[in-house]
Length: 337
Ligand SMILES: Nc1nc2c(ncn2[C@@H]2O[C@H](COP(=O)(O)OP(=O)(O)OP(=O)(O)O)[C@@H](O)[C@H]2O)c(=O)[nH]1
Ligand SMILES: [Zn+2]
Image (cartoon, rainbow, N blue to C red; front, top):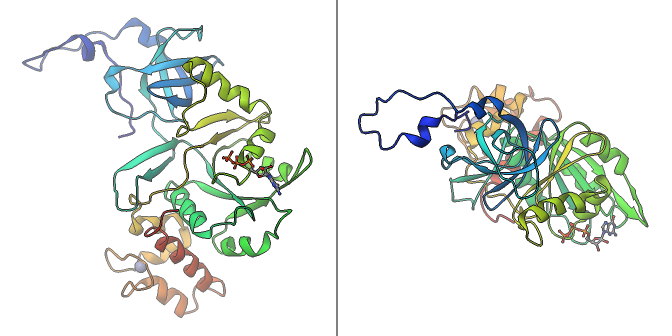
């Protein structure tokens, strides 16, 4: 689905075309002048873009692209009025192949997926250590979504002034998930430098429940975050960007964070357990010996992962790693908070 779709004039003008054999006309000259751009925000059919030469502009999707989705993080080609001047509207004529695709299903029984963000490197799961209490299940589900997307994951544990991060980070050690703890003291945010290092030069998606301190972090990381989202607001003429939309913000030191105000949970109906194991190179190698269609869960008959642990081949940490992996797998079903 994600492939390129070339724009050509015949798509627009030649209709109806009863014989279906009419030769394609030459492309519009403007096509040659298409500019490459990054999608920063999407708001009700309007795409807010940053061109590679630094122009911020608003565009619509060319009709020829049909129903194919364009999401934040997509790389696109844009034509028409690309001046970025007020009240101009350019056209997106092509969506480039996606490197990674972060998806969610409406709920766990739903296999129809929605793409949330394209081309992100890592998912930053922002969780407060207290007030509100951390929810390991929710974190597990975020990890499944990240690993399924072949993205890295980073735990960002806020409000470390209220509770010790250690017990919580223990849960993720065997999954090799990196973590950073932060807390605010006056205007200072401790741990911010460590977080910046983890974000530098990458495209990171931030998810987190209301009240965990995500806005506090975003504002500290991107000093003009409010203004940046304000740009989106001004162009749409509405007070605020819609709460369900994601917004890409450029980090002063290089890299991007994509805030996802509306994403509170991940439906995981689209995740296939048989291929999910491929996100873990060591487990995937062992799972080659599983029976066809093995779900790799604890009750799966003859799962090679059990033999791997039982034989000692997995090493001392193997059992805990397998347990953690299975914990993620089972988090796919059930309560989606
Ligand atoms: N104790 C403590 N409180 C914090 C810390 N960081 C943020 N808070 C408080 O937690 C509350 C929520 O912070 P926000 O940054 O607004 O949280 P959010 O996740 O963006 O929440 P929404 O705006 O509702 O999505 C505020 O009252 C903050 O003052 C921290 O490190 N320690
Ligand atoms: Zn198996």
